[in-house]
Length: 267
Length: 344
Image 1 (cartoon, rainbow over the protein chains, first blue to last red):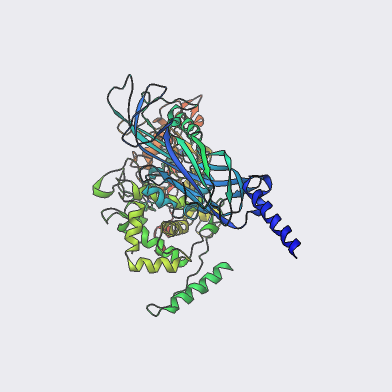
Image 2: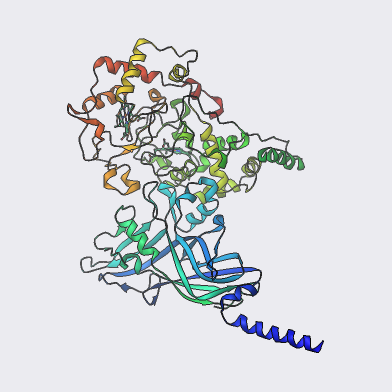
């Protein structure tokens, strides 16, 4: 009897150790489900994004004061260490993150226990969803309207609403800029997806509810892989040439900064 | 089966409270006329019901949808002129502000994939957002309209009876208006009767000649019995310098779409003056004169309108007379007098 107890305790201790290391087989012990929080920290380069406060100079020598940064993130998918993909319920998978309202957190509920290694999401609203009409949009239409993300003249969505003022060598007086990016009716689809490796495994179980901190570097929107000069065009909305470049840049502005594993209440 | 259950359920729900009498909700059938193309609208996603349709109709004619409480959809889309804004080149909205486009007819919307002259939206359900939020049309917000409806006990009850779930919300609001528009099928003109070999479909010689001319010279764009292929094209109208409406470019952002507009349906065309996206022509005679000698060339002019003989479509007087007679047989008196769609 005693002997058996020893073995039992030994096994328990061993398995406790095992669950501390992020070995591949940890999934076996993660049970149940919990939420995952994605916190979108908006930044400009390595600085915090402060709306209407700081100004930021980019590589094109344009100095921007940003007054609005809102974007739609959607269609979340999580991949675990076994390569399995968990797709979040599509109808619930559309969110507006908005620096001005401070609403920059996305909480995905009821994620099955597991060791997650990457996250995939879309920027904007895919055509499939749009073409589901009233049924597909549900309440997201009014959410978008209340956060300045409804592109009402075309009954669609702004995927990105990026506004402020700027100056440059040629534009010396502070001038408004507006970058609204979305799909162009049925003629141009600007919805993009990104997959980000988490770096640190995100562990989900009945007890574990991780927080993933993402950084969105707003400088990339105009000054990323593709360069868009505000001095040349300060209002970019439906431009067949420029809006796809904005879409590509925007999709590349996200990185995972760090992951908190734990009960989900510590940042 | 699902619908049957729902009908029973709503019966049950209604009968639980004794405030009002049991009203049965029934599915409506959307019949595709024999001479029409397939439906574009996904009926399964929003099957019209009697109560949904009636709610949609009430909303269509309710000025509450606008900021001043006065401009309804029906204000600009009048049944007697096949749901266009009779006598107005541009639409008049709140505070008497004027838009820059001519109000098109609303009929057979369930057969279309693109809406507005420039295809601003590709789903009928979402179209109402455009006039509601347009400051020169209804000047409201979706949120504002929904809140007004929530505050109205009668609407609340009607939404609950018309829809299985959700009550008053944007989704059900848009679904109801679509149900009304989806049922607005115009398919009983003399031309339709001719096509379907029905009584009253005998064409006169002039009408028959007009039809032949139309098929030869116009039906490449004004195709099928809806009289449009749904595409965006530049038919050679000289741009109006005051408006410089670029058409499809506004949506696509592509220069190759400059001055392209949706090929309009010609159903009930005798009732829908004025004509073209900016309502520049007051009569169909003027439209025909334009096609023969009013066109201007431009980079995006439709290829079919540039021939060795020059710009435009050649029509002699007799052919014009035939076409005018042909236009008359596209009028659907059943549709414009159909009480299911009328305001009062």
